[in-house]
Length: 122
Length: 109
Image 1 (tube, one colour):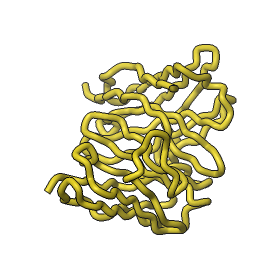
Image 2 (cartoon, chains in turn yellow, orange):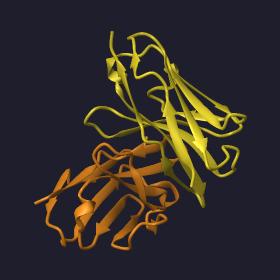
Image 3 (tube, rainbow over the protein chains, first blue to last red):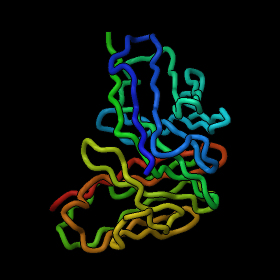
């Protein structure tokens, strides 16, 4: 069973950069047919897809975040990461990493990390 | 961008009841790539249904999904105490990629 674990600072200063890493265990990030994704949940709100990346480095981003967002993958460490620049209090959320299974034209998130709360505050 | 609207916002039911949750898309969902998730307080979401009607591994058969095009339904027959949670639908399309509905809370009446 694949497991995902987020890591990164729990507190980020406004206007600075939020960086998170997801470590994948129990399976290889090189596996074809899977994308590696970030999702966030603002306090008391629903889920927002941030973006995903393939092991080759090809990425797709939510258009609302695209200008501030970048993702990368490190296959040697079985990790993928996200960087969100110029953060504000509106970026305070629980951030989840998850695996996207792409099969038969279906794209769905079949494995999730436990989530990490990131607070943007001075 | 495909917008998903879930209804009702809250469903108040008793254990043993049948729950019917709706997810309506602003345009036809590509290839019926529609999934449902369950989220309990303080936990990550859990995949229940993918491809509109396929149960994920380990999901009890009291959970079922149906629908196509723009209208989809998640049905829970005979609610168990552990089923009271928030449910989200999610779709994929080649332009906006992944989007989620706003969620339906199933609460104990």
